[in-house]
Length: 325
Image (tube, rainbow, N blue to C red; front, side, top):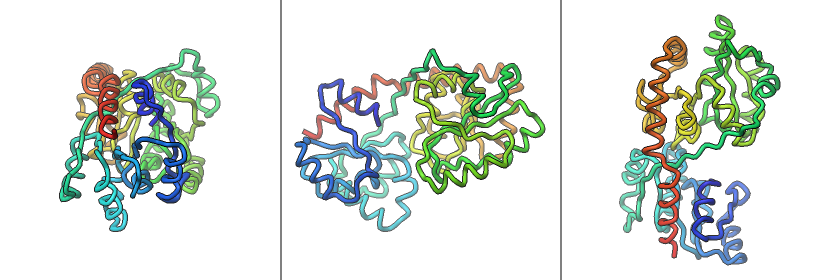
């Protein structure tokens, strides 16, 4: 979200970021836009953000989040609200062609079928040069004998749709047989109740650790020191963590869902697993085949440079905002 703001600032716009969870109704947003004299708005997530812009006095655009098109669409009331929001929007942005097609199939009857855009997320990684990897491991009670350590990092907001517990039991069994493997789960506590479940589960899972959140620059530096980055989500729009790992030359193991399969070609730019057992099999093959690992990260880095240029994303957002004038 911050990146979108930076793109707009760079074009001379004043951009104010607001958290949709802080607001209950469109009236509150209407009061805000009137009081502060905003000229336009961009809502991220068709339901969570978009519902607050219904009846807006200012023009707005929508950026699909992922769960809106993949999950919320199944709820009749949310589906109705999202259709109404799209009926008022100037444009909508999807991060994968599949997501664009899904939205077009669901709401294609909207008379102007707005301008439905598809462009890839731009990626820019900024690993800190002062990050202390050993302290990071010590804080998580992970052995710092890094010569034999194989650290897998699962980066996600702690909520059910990200399914961070999907691999815990199988990974813990694997760790008992091979103590060099560790799984770190890191990300904001988006759902406090679910976060408590994760903490409880991890307590009794040797080799699995819930890590303290760190600033993005430190997270990028930590990713560089890991063996692989993991994604076990039930649903994804387009995972920034996967793309960042690719940019940092770190292999990715991701659950085989449409959002992940849109950016990972199995055994070419990453590895896709369909169940926890397959995750372990693929992880072992990666550990035992450094040539395959090197080829995967090289192709993945090339893919990100070609298809997820930060500069291209910047131009796309700057052009889109002109549609709000």
